[in-house]
Structures are given as structure tokens and as C-alpha cells.
Amino acid sequence: MHVLNGASLERWTSLTDEEVVSRVTQGQTALFELLMRRHNERVYRAARAILRDDGEAEEVMQQAYVNAYANLRQFAGRASFATWLTRIVVNEALARVRRRRRYMPMDTDPDAPEVPAAWTHSESPEAQAYQRELRTMLEAAVDRLPDGAREVFVLREVQGLSTSETAEILSIREDAVKTRLSRARHALRTDLIQALGSVGPTAFSFGQSRCDRIVAAVLERIA
Image (tube, rainbow, N blue to C red; front, side):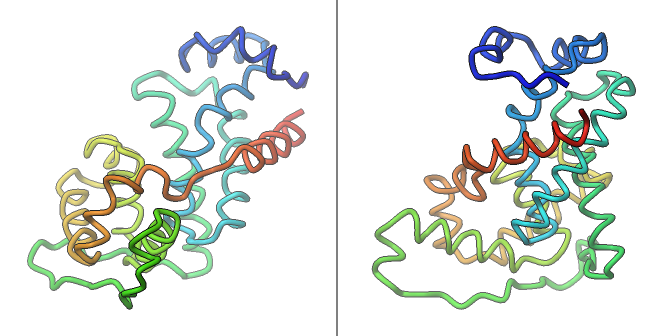
């Protein structure tokens, strides 16, 4: 597979995901890189929400991209490409934690008792003064949310997906999404929820160097 450089990618950036998919399936396979670069952060956040480990999240991302590339002709456009791709990475991540018996989905019964996050609040002035430290606190708190609540919280509050998109990606009912999100919000301390408006969109970010590493690894595997 030919690898595109920045200038080569630039000429294709006006294409929609669906148009890029069409071109890839028709033989312009190098354009798959554009899809990866567009969605790396979304895919990373979804994987890490389940795995709670940066390294494992990157491994799952690579496999999910390979799976998506191999099955690209099955993308029918009934959902957006981003939703289709995110569902692939979620399934891959869930398969990994379930094989290790490390995942216990939370009870979605509305009458079930709340499951609080294991959280120790810091009164450090620095933690309140700097967004970087506040973001670290937020990420740690989200990592301690129960399985099931954690990925719903990341997809809805960090990634900004709708209830219906989240339900489709996780293969659960919309009312289950609402219940899990409500419990996740309750489990997180009020100060972190208030801070989310300013630092939430930067949580679990995926820098350029990591993006380049993932793209290079996937392109090598599907070449």
C-alpha cells in the first residue's frame, strides 16, 4: 500500500468519510490513512474507556483498523462511518477484557443502588489552578467508574455522541445509556463535573506522534 504524505492527504480532505470509503474499496487503498487520521482520537477514547490502559488501547485500535479495512465493503452506510468504526473498536476492546474476565457490566435496573467511584479528593491548590492537573484528576476519576458506566460517560460526555449513537455502538438500549450516564455523573464529584466544560474535550487526547505511530503500524499490517 502506498503511504500518503501530508501534501497528498490535503487534496482529499474535502471528501466525506463515505466518499473516502468508496474510493478505498475501488482501489485507492492509500486513502484509508485519511480515515485513520480523522478518527484516531475518537477510536482511542472508546478503546481506553473500556481497557483503562494506554498501551492496550493502542493495540486494540490497530486490530480494529485492520478489521475495518478487511470488512470495508460491508459498510452499508446505515449509520455514519464514525459510528460503524467505533462499534468495531468497542467490540474488540470488550472481547479482550471479557477473555480475561476483567469486565463486570453494571446493573442497569433503575432501582438498583448507586455504585460510587473509588475516589479520593485532593484539595491541592495546583489541582484547581491548572487545567492539566485537573484533566489528570478527571481521567483518574473516569477510570474508576464501574464497567459499563465508564464507556458510556466517555462516549457521551467526552466524545459528545448522542444517546442513540452511544446505544448503537455499545449494543444496548437507549434507556440503559441514560441510566448508566446518570450513575456515572452521580459517582463523579461535583467539582469534576463542573470542570468538564473546560477540560472535558481534552481528556484522553491523542497527540500527533501517537497518531503517526498508529497509522504507520496499521499501514504496515494491511500493506
